[in-house]
Length: 351
Ligand code: SF4
Image (cartoon, rainbow, N blue to C red; front, side, top):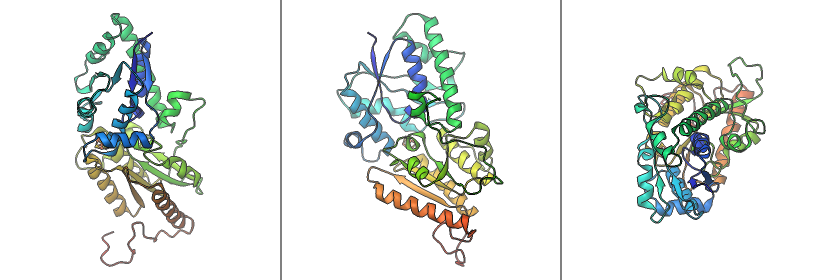
């Protein structure tokens, strides 16, 4: 029987699980996932975390606790530094394996691999080869495993653009999966009865139902068509980024601001919702830039800050009020309705 390796169902699991799962399984490894996020997982994560940690990292710690109970041989916690040239991930990802080892004693050994695409040369990154060597001495097998993993990852990215949900794709494949249906949206779109909303945030906030209190389903039940920040092509994101005077050097910051600005430029949604993690440094800047741009343009923008104390009832009330306001603005053509709580004829209003 192969080695059992535990992967926490949190943070970049929603972006890279298929890649790691394909690579490791091709080398004979058995993958064990932590349970879906729940109250116990969050509480255990909070107990281990230092005060100022952001919610997604606290949740990640909780998933590590959960895996530690599943008797795995190793935990797989990559150290993500950079996933594209000239850009970096948030420093929390860079320190994650070390943080885990120090904050949660007694866990299974951590398998760590540095993901730094700035340094990649050739088809097979050295770090992947080193990782593969832990399971086989056959270099050809490692190369083939990595090739298959990359192909699956490419297909996964395409499915995300079409609106598929990550876990649906991981476990059901495309045929049986539900999708949010990314259609070509233009301002003069025929279907004027549909209310469209951009949902902007990190994958772990968008797709972890427990963290976001099932916002996707709630919005769908309200009859809203959703377009998430993971449903934009590189070209669309780059087109949105042209509005900025300076480049953004965080990869996920680039995605969120690029997609939000693209929506603003194309005027294809009736409003946007920003899902922000409490205590997230990058979000505090990026989301504020988006919020200001939408205010200037007079397009409604709702910011939902997610933390461990967020109450579902409060979130639903805010969502319902936001959707109701959008419907009024749209159906009754009451575009003069204030989008941000200030009377539009207020003389001091800067908008
Ligand atoms: S980007 Fe923000 S939410 Fe994500 S890990 Fe970094 S600080 Fe936490």
